Structure formats: structure tokens, C-alpha cells
Length: 304
Image 1 (cartoon, rainbow, N blue to C red):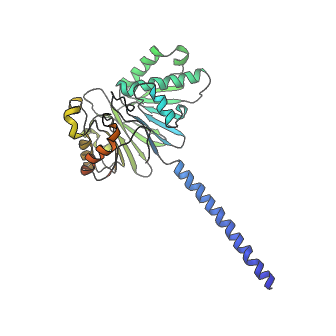
Image 2: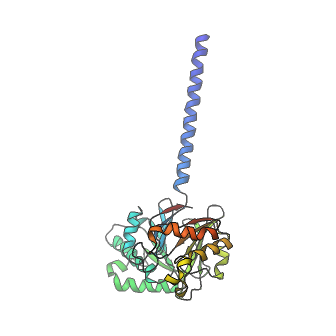
Image 3: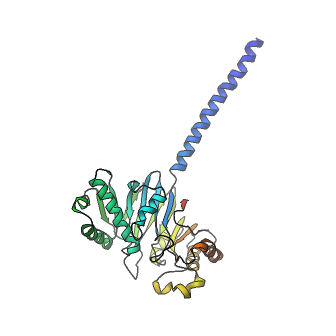
């Protein structure tokens, strides 16, 4: 009896220990999957049209291995930015182009070349959708025909789909509802977008111009708001943002406070203050805004 009793205790403890390890292993695996598929935003570029110390403003959103890219910057450097961020162009299944300015559009031509050339060479067998308003889509079609070879352009419309979207139109991207909206630009027709994700959260991108009241229903109470800030308010005389129809750090932060935004990301900036940009922009913005303020550098990734 004593022998049996003594042996049963380690047996039971060993069994319990085994099941505890099994349970903990499953929990660790489940948690790792949850982290893997959490929405992430990678900033590929943070600068305005004429920057030389960083790349033009563009970014990606992803859950897992599928990516949604917004704008492409001004040239082939988009390929380097993607490479440095550890993102394969083959994993970008959806692109949205906000407007036709060259610092947003020309990188998309390089993406089109990569997709179509990859298909022509049998190196890429996926499908891609590129969204934009009518002027953007028309221009992309024209430029593709002019700049790419016939072997490449035959895939446009077949496996590379250039899709026009209208103001207020909705699409499912990364499994989430995305609404595109006209920001009523005074310079060039431009759309922003609002993505609803993760149980009531929403991310709103206002393009690269100051907030317009027509965007209120999308921007108000945003979990994340992406807004341009051309320069510091204290340096407005130097950079003249208002003449270019842009806003300052102070303007954007005051706006985010009024709109009850939880997290504000500032981009499309000058690069003369690049070495101290985080410090200076945060110093000016935080007194105006009580939420979380982000002044990202190129290639930073944020969990949303």
C-alpha cells in the first residue's frame, strides 16, 4: 500500500504537468497567431514632394502576409523601400492611389512593371487590384501603354486590374470594409479612405492636404488618423505651408483633438529638420493634442 501510494503521487503530478504543458503550448501558439495577424502599418516614406533625405509619403497595411499599399512615392525607390522593410512586392495584392501628383503616382508605374514583367516571365502568378478615382486610373492606363512593353501590358485588365472608385464607394480589402471619399481638393482631385477593422476600430487617411469638413463623418472618433503636416507652425514663415495648401504640426494636432482621435500619425513633411523631426514635432504638437502622437521615420512599423 505504501509503495502504491508513493508511486501514484508522481504519476498524477506527471500527468497534470503534461496537460499543463499541452495547454500552455496551445495558448502560446494561439497568442502567436493573434500577434501575427494583428493589423500593422509600415511607413515606407514620410516626406513631401521635394524631399531628398527621406522618401515620399506612402505606406502599407497588412494582416499576416497580404499587404495593402497606399501610394507609391515618386520613383523606383519604392522597390528599395519595400525591400528594406522586408516586404515582397509579390505580397501586395491591393493598391490605392490617392491622386495623380508625381510624388504619389510614379512609384506605381514601377509596381506595374514588376507585376506585368513577373507575369510575362512566369515569375509571378498572382492577381493585383489597383484602385483610384477616374483621373488616376485613366492616367495609369495611358502611362502603362506608353512606358511598358506589349508583352507586359497584355496583363493589364487580365490579371492586373485598374479599378475606378467613386466618392463614398466601399470595397473589402484585407477582409475589412474600406470606404473611399473625395477630399474636395483645390489642387488636384484626391481621395482619402477609411478602414473599419477589429471590432469598431477605424483608420482614416485624409490624403496629403488639410482636413476638409466633408471628411468629418470618416475622421471623427478615428482610432488612427493619418494627416499631413508640412512643417512646424513656428517655421511657417520659412516653409510657407498655407501657400501650398498644407497644414502645420500645430494645425493637425489641434484638429485631432477636436475630432476625438485616439492616435495621430503625421507625415508628408519637410526634411530640413529630419535629424530632430520627432523631437521638434512632438514638442510643438503635444500641448495641442492629448492623444498618442506619432512622428514616424521611414520604414517604421506600428501595430494598430
